[in-house]
Image (cartoon, rainbow over all chains, first blue to last red; front, top):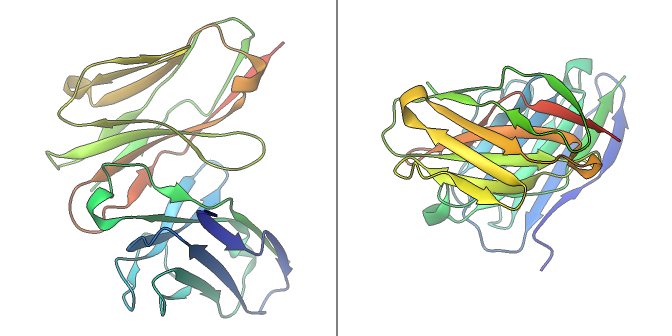
Length: 115
Length: 115
């Protein structure tokens, strides 16, 4: 099993460009999350999904959109990238009945730089 | 609102010293879960331990030990006889049992173990 796979691993964008980060999990998990990690701030929740076709905002959703068209995939989109979105992005997933009771399964992160 | 505070931004110790990483949390929930994650220089998030709010028993795993005290809302992590391989950023996180059930992370403590 691959677990949680994030693509790409690295990306450099210019201000105003758009891109989509892909998160794929092969564990049939219902819950999926996107976090961003910035120095001195830990990981902050951007958006999350509790099932196929559903999405919801986290703590820092501005400037991002998400979609969960298939249960195994959770896409994070930046429509018009800004330097403030330079960060490391982590995707995570979990079974609904295990969330909190078991650790989340994290991907290895995507390092995004916006110039 | 949930909050996790890791007041120690960076700690530097010499190999074989013991070191304690502090974590203080805030929550209104009666059922919640606490986690510690390690992030080595390679960048991935490694799960270390989970503790639920009903279990205040301390835990020891090899050189690692955790002290959970509900009275002070703390979940501290001690590494005994530290090694260079322990050098990493350590995150404390809190999850609750209802709603989105996402993890709320502290800002992390960077541990540098010098040889």
